[in-house]
Length: 401
Image (cartoon, rainbow, N blue to C red; front, side, top):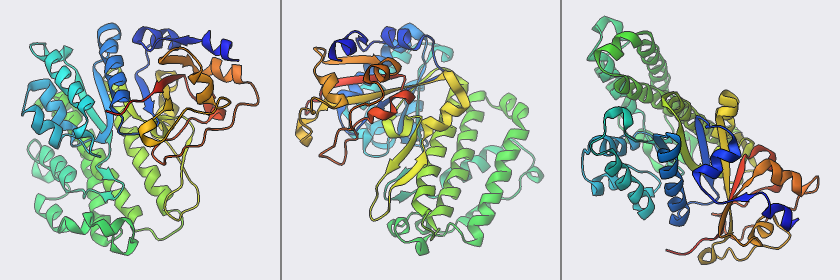
């Protein structure tokens, strides 16, 4: 079996990925099985550079707050702000501290300098304004959408005034208090005010769509797309807060599913712009249902962003899952020889990409059992799910930085 796998491996290059896929997908998803390892982000950076130079990709999207990502995009496209400011204010989940993310932003800005707008690279966060400890309130997105429309349309077309939104939103800490995540009774997501806000947000989004020709002509397609992002985020957050107030056993499943739905909506919008490389955890990009054990809940299952996007885009969505050999500084040591990672670890290459379909065929009807992870932050690949993966990127050893 080892020899068979060796025969279907390639170096990790854009050319090898294109050959493996046979076409250029609109969304090329590159997953990681753990967060916080810059060597995996360095690999992503190398692949993105090659995709830009060889395949015409112009957008990279990462698992970070979509509104904060606007700060990064403004910097890489026009030089607004400083690199230090952008790394501090443009990323969620602590990703701004990554040296590899900093290098990505620096390179994109350098690449764009002096180029016409049509050739510039774009950056996007595609996650909602969400952290595991809670969610942002809807104020930023909702008031930005309202302000965009109010500045360009007659007042009688708008469903409400800015003052009405401010009254209904109330104090921001009602939405963002940390206790809301664990105590549904603390959430305002099912109050009368929140319900009215969701109706108004839907009306504002409908107005934005109905006035599309005028709004694009009066501003630009980029401004209109940003307003659409505000609309998606406002309605997405209001629905997320609705489920934060839920007391049923399905609460966490609905919250996880709503997060991935917000991710999927953002990716589909980016796909309209052009070919996009998206980088996130394997669990968000896979075509199968995602699963998680959290706190004292039974196993949670929900459809990932990748599954939702793949259902819409078909063959124009491709997924490369990353598998790892060792992360010794996290006590993830040499994988068992009979595991999927162990079979790949026996190959001479430090990094390679393997055709997922051919690999599944070599493993046959009785694939090896999934590797057990000694560290909760690392999720090994499930060999039984290779049929939903276009390619496996294998990294033998992840060094400590």
